[in-house]
Amino acid sequence: MNFFEEWIELDLNPIISFSSSGKIIYSNQEAQFLLSRIKQKELFDLALKYAPQSFGVETSYIDLTIKNYSFYAITVKYENEDELHTKLYKSAMVKKHSKLSTKNTNITNIFTLVDLTISTKKIKSPTKFIKNYDPSIPEFKINANEFIKVLNLIYDFFSDSSIITTSVILKIGEYIKIDGKKHSIISVEVLSNTKEYTETFNYKDENSSFIVSSNENKITVDLPFVLK
Image 1 (cartoon, one colour):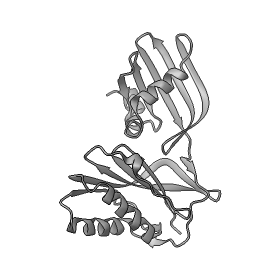
Image 2 (tube, helix red, strand yellow):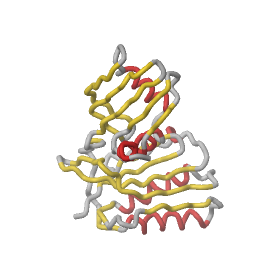
Image 3 (spheres, rainbow, N blue to C red):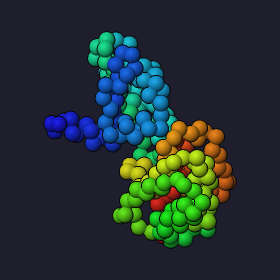
Image 4 (cartoon, helix red, strand yellow):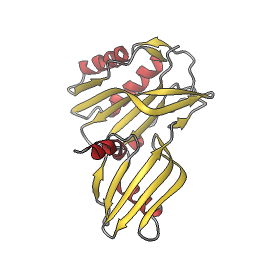
């Protein structure tokens, strides 16, 4: 991989090349994250919508929200009859959630909460639980009771899975905005090894301190990274 290929691979914006039939020829790391949440055809249709009428390059400024992603522009290069190249430009902020509540939150170790919930589930379940943690994440403000409640609901939803993988990561370049302040995002992603209709998973709380989203066999809890 040369310098320019590596530079594209590390770009924080999704870059995808499609064939004329909609098959993916290339996708960088960020695009692969996006494709784990969004159907390939949906992105191909988006590229066709904003493609130039003839060969060339066109950039359109848009206000587009897909799942937890927000984009402010798209560039489509129509190079020849066989290829269509697309770049989506992520907004600095994922979602505005002024209604998110930071009440009843305390400085807490998120890994302890996840471990506690998993330990409880393992007692009565044959499911194998895999954990992927970013150990650099410090303690931050969490509504522990609410977080454990939703995590239990997620594990119950995936109770028929033989393997459940839980990842705790810091999202790079994405933010939650609460009362005019931007906060980084700590994301807890729970992935089942079997295909589930996670669209049927529903969690609503008007005073929630986090965002819950789902896609195919994964449910994600995004928490604002509030340290004090």
